[in-house]
Length: 449
Image (cartoon, rainbow, N blue to C red; front, side, top):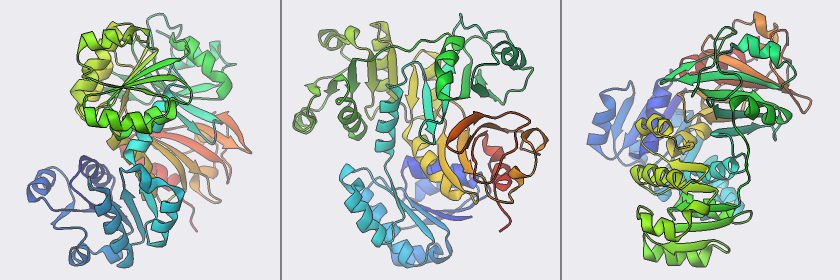
C-alpha cells in the first residue's frame, strides 16, 4: 500500500517506522529536516521536507496516487487541513489526528466527512476510554473486548500462588477442560512466545488470553488474581487524557484530580461536575498523604512526563493502592515500568497505531489492538467467502507461525478456537500476531474477488 504520513510528532514517527516495516511504501512529510534525517538513518522510507498544508508539497509527495494519508502533526488544525487538501488532490483515504474534544462531536465528524476526511483519531480519547475500561476489570493489566463482549483479550501477570505455574498448556487444557479461555501469548524476560502445547507457565509471566465472558473469573483464579471493587480514584494530570478520563469516571466513582498548574486546575473545576480538583504537585509525598492517597482503590498518572507518572505510581503502591495506571510515552520505559510493579501502562502512540493499522490491511478488519506489553497486535477479522482461512480446519491451515487464532464469533456467539474447528464465511475471527506475520495473516483472510 502507498501511505503518506505528515507531521513531526512522536505519533507520526512511530507510525512511519511501524508501517515501513510491514512492506508498505511509506512517504513521510515533515517541516523539520533534522527530524527526517533521524528517521532516514534507520528506516526504509521516502522523506520530504516541507509543509504538508502546501498543495505543491502534497503533489511532490504524489498524494493523488496515495491509498492512505495519515496526518499526525501535534496541531490538530494542521492535520484537518492536510487531510482535506490531500483528499481533494485524489488521495483514496484520509485520517486526521486531533487532540481537541470539540472536534470529535458527531456534528463535527459529519462536516469533516463532507470535506473529505474519512476518519478522525484522538489518542487522548482512546487512552481515556482504555483507562475507564481497565477500572471496570480491575484484575487485568490490559483488556480488550470483541463484538460487544462476546470474547475478550486479557493480560494477566502470573502470581507465585497461581495454580498454573509449572504446568504445560496441554496439562492445563486436560485439567481445566471446562474453562472457556485460550492463551495466545506468553511474555517472559523481554521475549514473546506464541505458546504451543508443551510450553510451561512460569512465575511473573505476562500471559495474553482470549476468554469468553463466563471464563473471566476462572481465568483470574488460575492466574492468582482477584477482582476487587473500585470506589475511590485519584488522577494525576489534568491534560486531555486526565480530564477526559475524569469525565468518564466521575459518573461511577468518587474522583480526585491533581494538577500542578493553578490555571488549569481552576478551569477543570468549572468543567468537571463531580470531580474534586486540587492544585498541587503529586510528587510531594506530604500532599499525597494529606489527600488520603492510601484510601484510594485506583491511582492514574497521566501527566505529560513519563518519569513523573512512573514515580507517582510507585509512591501510590507504597501507600497500598491496589490498581496503578501510568501513561508512559517512552516505549523503552514500558518493560521497566511493568517490572517494578506498575499494574498497567498506557501509551498513546500504540493506542493510535491500534486504530490506524486496520486501514492498511486488504482483508476486512473490524477492530485492532496494538498491545502495550509486547510488540504485537490483535486483529478481529471478518472471514470472506472463498478466502484461504475458510478452506480447511484450523489445525490443517498453513497459518503463519508467528500468529495464532484465539477465538471465533459466529451467529453472535463467541467460541474459543479449537484445532478441529473450520472457519466459515461471515465468522469474526480473533487473531494474535507478531509484526512479521501481519502480511501472511492478511492474505489468509483475503478473498480472490
